[in-house]
Image (cartoon, rainbow, N blue to C red; front, top):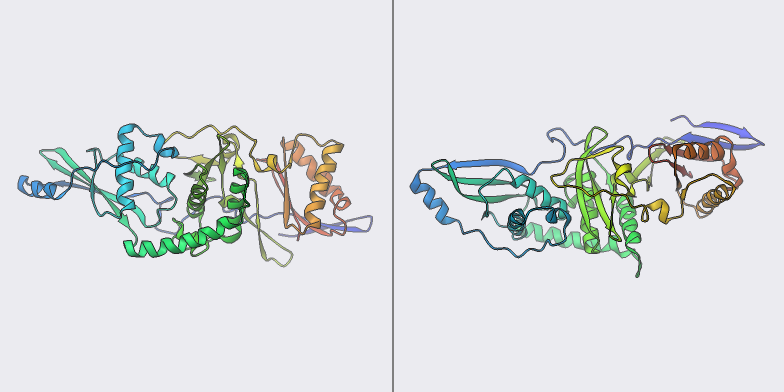
Length: 403
């Protein structure tokens, strides 16, 4: 994009509208040819109507449904299910965890299995060795007498074990930068920033629907980011669930995170942004627009499509801008001085970017007018000649990027 240069009092200030290549232009996770949006879990439905003797042999070979002790109490999607469906969830998850080839379920209704399996994958981002499932209904005289569940694995149990060890080693490094005594907000912010800094958005990346792409290949898409966020926060005992749906016309995945008893939306993918510098190079930076936001804000460009009801997120206390003292409700003299000081501190410390959020679109537009059109950013950033900027009028955020 062309960079416009203007002069005032012999001070040169180049101002360019920021071109966002990731968080805005690549608004969703458009998948490669052959994929229909977010990969759906049901690969095949097998309906087996057999002769009585053959059916009896098949059924005798299956064990009775197991009574499985739940490991998912407190998981958001799990808790949304009825007691009956929680039992099926437990049996399906137990089969996946044990790498079972086929297990019998305590149900004869196959149509509900996809919804239950989607609840499992929403609660567990680390299931990198399974991508879908199939089920078999054993019928006699048109009546289902037994139903089995068979996960579709992408690797053997031995391959899974080797990959898990490598993932655990990498995950430990991702968590290493969290200071002792850090608040849950600081932990979430660290994971959000670390995932963006360490992992590139790459549409053609392998394993991009699971965490292998994040921890072992460092290239992924939205599903990988959301799964890794859930996986890492689970290790920190911070409730987190994966949300899938549509965003600006494309399939997308993001997260719900619970902090201090309140739920917030987080979208790591849309925090991974780039801009073109003077030499047309892509420069990556972390954008915090979608770190701990409300339902009202998220629904402006995201459309969740989940099998379970999502909470109404209204809290703002753990929003990035509120926590960092970068949320302003006016542009009075005191607020302008504080914003200028924020710009100065970021510039002098060599930060790549800094963003401010306002209570209204009008305030955001006025801030752009004052600090850029009227050149007042140079009053706070001595020697600054070139700056990039972006204004997000949906979320009322003003971003400054220092070259």
